[in-house]
Image (cartoon, rainbow, N blue to C red; front, side):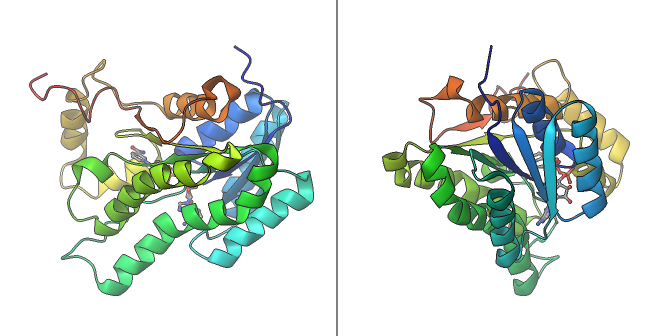
Length: 259
Ligand SMILES: NC(=O)c1ccc[n+]([C@@H]2O[C@H](COP(=O)([O-])OP(=O)(O)OC[C@H]3O[C@@H](n4cnc5c(N)ncnc54)[C@H](O)[C@@H]3O)[C@@H](O)[C@H]2O)c1
């Protein structure tokens, strides 16, 4: 199936690690041009080098995305370098454990800035360019938006808002033929997941318990499986799909609990 991404330009936030890295690599393999925006310069450059080595096209910009000015710079950098934006993949996020008890009003607000504000800010600054290309937006959400997790109010609030914004933006952007969708992972082995599970009392036992409850094949979702859905949604092959929140989670969030 030709996804027709050839020479189209896609911004992937947090595109150097975990799910974002898989998205960057699959876009590049489909001949799209990737712009990685993330906070770690060395990680970003390493991913760009890997993509270029495999014959793809990519560049990167270092950005702490909680800062609105950094979001504007990401868009300016992309447009100066490539002259267009065909897709925005809002992926960067961190389950930072700011809860009601282990938190404060300041930390809650900072968590929203780091996990949510850049989804809006990048979409806002990218919009004039997405209008020109009839590009589209894919957000990466989390099951925590619908299940809760405990002790992670900032992250959960951000992910809940991302689901709401998916519908809201899909409506607002109808006149421009810009589609907006969200891919929603549950359990994916990435650096973020590894750091999170290590914070629990018995990480190995907890991991085995979680995996045993994932209905489809009792295994975690891979980053590539999240990326495949993301890239399909970016492509013309999903040209009448908008405002959707798609769970790529092996049935973890919805199937019968007795399984
Ligand atoms: N791994 C999972 O099981 C899982 C489950 C549900 C949702 N998600 C979501 O998937 C997305 C990717 O998660 P992952 O597991 O690949 O994470 P990860 O930590 O492995 O990679 C995320 C990348 O984004 C960067 N980043 C994060 N916040 C940033 C910010 N504010 N500014 C700049 N860079 C930033 C990190 O430095 C890192 O390079 C996140 O939105 C996360 O909430 C992941």
